[in-house]
Length: 212
Image (cartoon, rainbow, N blue to C red; front, side, top):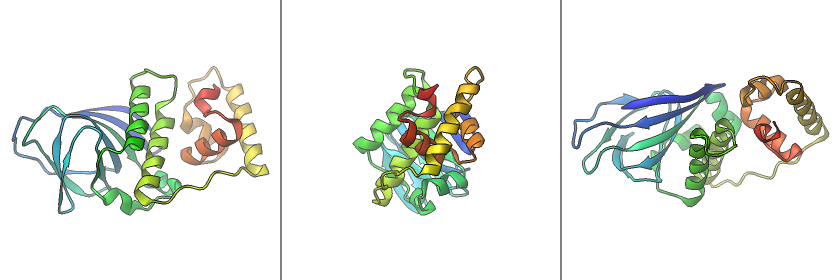
């Protein structure tokens, strides 16, 4: 398995996985290191997790929680590719999602999640001006909403929120010539990356990356 870390910042890791396993090769027991949300971009494979078996195809979502063991099998085809969004516990908390959602094992291809995942993939490949970290967190938030069945209430900015967003915009203006990412801006505002992204976008009407 070839794994390329695209981004590692503030509890968020984006990894490109390309499997080189041969057809019907004996599976190896592996262990999830974080809350994992992996989009199957290409291929098909079996996923054995927490006593359940799943057959994943392009567009499926593979899920996992830190410390849990799993195996992948290749009984039909090989050469699959996945884009994996891995979250630290504090980011899962910021999403307001129950950690048990990540223990569901897998989800079939769902249009809403495929679109969010493909937008993240486009950012990773540099095919869009959007930032990969922002889109990865948006993808994770969409998954949490879809898996829980609880629609997130529209964000209503209070006076304090508006002040924070404007102060953040001014901070971005002052640091525009520096290599700033979402984690830097969120840390300067004293917020988690997800909460900062949500607040800033609601007040300013653009993501921090788009603002820059």
